[in-house]
Length: 119
Image (cartoon, rainbow, N blue to C red):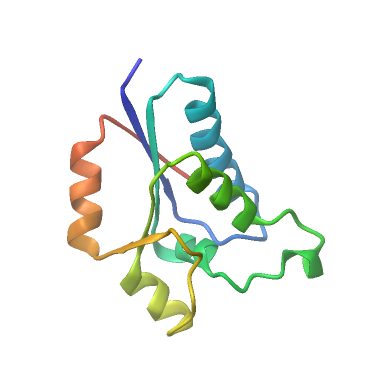
């Protein structure tokens, strides 16, 4: 067992279930008590999961924003590499509570977590 888990989300919000599954893995570990500290890091196309103006209902898909909000409601930190997000969608609003970091901050998160998984 480990004291912490960092789940890295690299996939876009819709078109596959990878991003949703990664968020649910982090949430499940947190809720079950198996991992006292679970955090999520959005990088690459995964940063699109933090865009506040998603309209998943148009696609008939569950909202990844709801999954992120569930994590935030459980006090799980959610980080987003800001440069990756801005490169993809410009100056768009992110979900409130998501912490923007640069690549140096992302590397620091990787170095301080004992278990890291990627989706």
